[in-house]
Length: 597
Image (cartoon, rainbow, N blue to C red; front, side, top):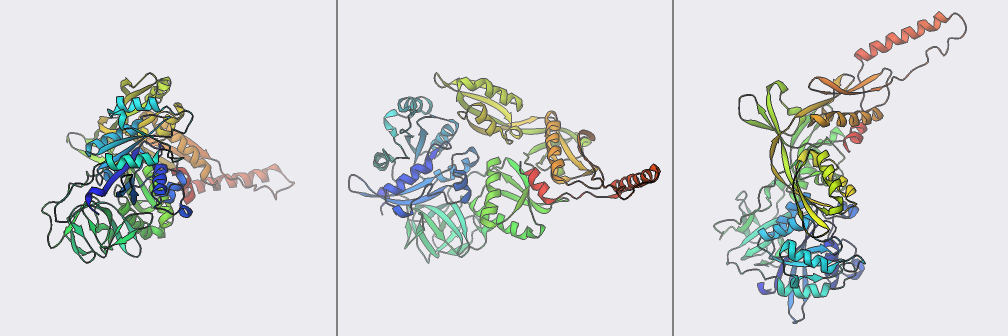
């Protein structure tokens, strides 16, 4: 197939604006999937995606489309996530395309992630085709949203395609416009140059790498080189992507497909690497991708200590399919051996935990999420990065601690601005600007500590705005903050898995929540158990689990009262000794129930 008949495009949008539904209608219209096998969210293959109704992994599929001019086109479609945590997935997908469909909800209009994805596509120099979706709803405002597209994004209103992905109305017009609006891939040279934009692990074939061919061609039997480690592999199989992979005799310039190179070790594949022929390599690799920086950190430990090796193998395989995940070994006195992992956000953390369970049958315990703090020592001028409370230096040696600050953009109806400002101020945020987008909607810009938005901030924002506000944020800088380490003590013994770093003003509130949960989870013993939270050597919160009482006087009937008193005093002395030397058994399930929130 010549390059002029190929169209490579992504579908990008704010969360829940209809990307996956539109992908379903395109699959139906092009007859890529048999009607009997068709189901909702066809390209969302992960269990976590179907359960939550969101896309967390980009999915690529190759389609054939017969246009009105009787020419057959090959469409390489990549469906992308919409949540801010998975922006990295979007940027990777765009690197394999020449164009993008920017989907906008006819009832919600341009939202924060709409703008963020628009700029990602602009930076990648893609041709952007704006699409207004959900025109079948009674509250749809097509004219108003078209005005927003022209005013907020600067895209011509004449280019807009209005449709309903749910009913299929207007999807045929979209495809007809797409093949004439989005340019074909540029003709490359004769030397093979292919970009690895994703990969996954097949238990029978090893690593399967997804590539966009920018120049040249590749076929089974060819020997290729990866720039990442300069190793040479023989191509076992080439093919096109779809609901089911389709084996081909070769892949050529402009195409998107997969390569199987017999790679068994997941560490040998680097997302963003370049594939070229070993006998006639290109001089320079493709630019690849910017190194992703995790923003939220937590410990992952196996629920059963014997499953450590299984967890290690599972993380290695998951990283092949999720290159934004980083991890390193960690040890905890309470939870044993595990890993300190970095995530793009709290949703990413939650998705990784569920994928470990669904795909690898790995039951895990996660410690409290934290961000990376910069800790400066007295007189040194240098800092160390701390994302684990256990690694915080002695407070006496610390000159100052700085925390990451994000520049947050919140688009909301003007009626909810007061509630949004109050929410942000409660999270130590500072208002920087307010821009009115039209008579009813505005964009408010805030500087907020990252540590304050990783805990239920998004849910609270949706709550105070009746679901209308949207959020996008980027790391801005670091600022000095009064950060303290809070240690949780059970029977005066610290439990390292429950310690956390927090701003001093929020320390008591967070501590009381944890102690209250801990009191419910730890079973009563024969002696009273004090639960304490300490910050800087000072106890800031306390709960007590009362002792289980045995009636030692049950068999003592009749006679003088001193007999009962003697037995009670003996019991009291025994409890005092037990409290001094006894240890408290904290069930593993207690850690699961406390830390999951």
